[in-house]
Amino acid sequence: MTAQGKLFIVGIGPGTLEHLTLKALNILKQVEIIVTYTGYLKSLEKLGLTKGKRVHATGMGEELKRVQLAVEEASKGYNVALVCSGDPGIYGLAELVFRYIDVKSLDINVEVVPGLTAAIAAASLLGAPLNNDFVVLSLSDYFTPWNEIIEELKAVAKTELVIVLYNPSSSRRRSKFVEALKLISNVRGNPIVCVVKNAYRDNQQVIVAKLRQLDLQLVDMNSIVIIGSKRTQLLRNGCVVTVRNKTF
Image (cartoon, rainbow, N blue to C red; front, top):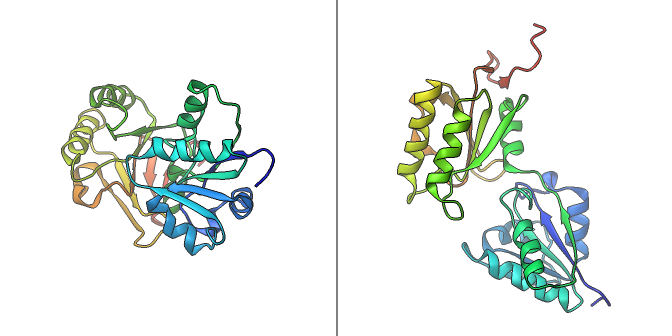
C-alpha cells in the first residue's frame, strides 16, 4: 500500500490485448486493486491482469457500487483501477466518479486513462464510415428518458450526420429500436446501415444492409449500429465509407 492512493479510471477498449493502450496495460499491471463489472472479468483474467491483486466485481446496474468501492479503496491509500470497456468518458464511469467525489467533498487523486471506444472499433471493421461528421447516441433509457432520446434522434435524423447507436436493442427494448429505425426511415428513406456485434471479441459479426432490409433480430446490446448519410457508400470491395474528399 502506498502513502497516498490514486484512482485510475481505465478504458480497456474491446477487451483484447492488441487494442489495449500501452498506458492502460502498464497501469493494470501496477495497481493493487481492480474494480470491474463481472462481464469484463473474464477478459482481464485471460490477459493475466488480475493475478496477485484484490478484485471487486459487481453486476449490471451496480455502477454506483463499483464507484463507491473504488473510491473507498483509493481513499485508504491503495492504487486502484476502476475498469470500463471502451472509453471511460463515453457512456462510462468517469462522470459518475467525479460527481461522487464532488458530492462527498473528497480529496482523491484521479486519472482517466482513455480507451478505444466501441464506435471506433466497429468502424475499423467496416472501412471508413465515420470519415465525415457523425453523432453518437445511446438508445438505452436506463439513464435518459425515452422521450428525450426520441427528440434527439428526430433532430439528428434531419442532418447529414452519420448516426452511431450504442445500446441499440435488447429483449426488453426491441420495440423501441423498431420505433427508432422507423423514425430514421421516415426522414432518410433507406440508407446504408452497418451492424457490428462483439467487435474484436468472440463471435464477431459484421452486417451491412439497407435499413428496410435489416434483420432486426440480429441486433442486441453487444451491437453497434451505424446509420449512413447521403455521403455514405458501399464500395465494390465491400468497404463502407463516408465521403469527405470528392477529388475522385
